[in-house]
Image 1: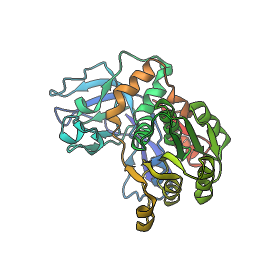
Image 2: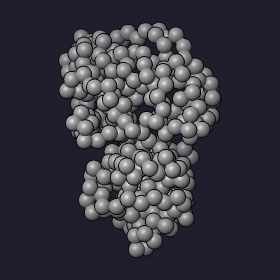
Image 3: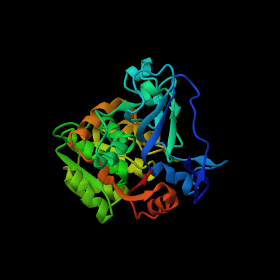
Image 4: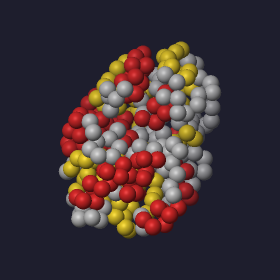
Length: 338
C-alpha cells in the first residue's frame, strides 16, 4: 500500500509500505476514504520535534472496515467508521468518566495518511455512521476524528454556556472549530483572534461575532475593553505556545475558564500569574471518542458542516504539497483523497 512517511524536517515522501495485518483479536483494519494533515504534524515538519527515524504520518481517519479480529463485536466488515487519534477500550474507569484519551490501555494512532490503517481496541475506538455517507459528508466526518472533537472538548473545558462571552486564541482548524462548538453550546458572544482574511471569514461563518487582530497583551487588552474591563467568561487556547497560553489567561476574567488543547511546546505558567488570576485551567489531549456519537449525528443530519475547514484537497501522492501549503499558511487544513 502507499503511505506518507516523514524522514526529517521538510522531508515528506509517499512510499510503498507493508499491508497491515491483525495483531490482536481486538484489532480491525480499515480502508481509508480520506486522510488529512494536522497542525500538530507541522511541529516535526518544521523541526520543532525531533525525528530520529522515518515516521509514518497521520492520526485522523475515516473509512470502511475491511477486516476484524475474533474479539471485535461492535463493528463489522463493511461499516463506515470514524475513529479518534487515540485508541481506547471505552470501558475502563477513566473512559467511563469521559477521558478516553487517558484510557488505561490507550494507544496513540499513527500512519493514517495511507490507504489502509490498523486500529487497535476497535470496539472502543471506532464509531459507525448510520450508513454509507454521501461524498460531501466525508470531509466533515473526517474533521470529527480530531479537529472538531478537539475544538468541542476545548469549548467544554472552557465551560462555554448560553449567555457567555468566549474568546478563541488560534485561527487554525481547531480554533475555528472551537468557534463552531461555542456557537452550538449557546455562547452569546464569540471573539476570534485572527489576522488572516480567509480565516476571519470562516470564523464568522462558524459563529464568531467579533474579530480581534491584536496578539499577546495587546489582544488581551482589547478583549478586556470589549467586556467592560472584565475579560471573557471562557477562552479556548488552540495553539500550544507560551505566547498563546499567556494571552488566553490574560483574556479571561477572574473566575473564568481556559480550555487549552494546543499541543504544548515549552509552555511555562508563572506561579504568581496562576495564583493571582483566579482562572480555571483545563485541557490536554481531547477525549474525542466521548463526543463522536453526538458529532456524527450533527454532521449526518447536516446541522453542522465542519468540513469547510478543508480548503485544499490533493491526492495522497501529493502529500508533500499538502504539508508545504499548510506550513506556508496557504491552506488552513489539507485533505488527502485516498
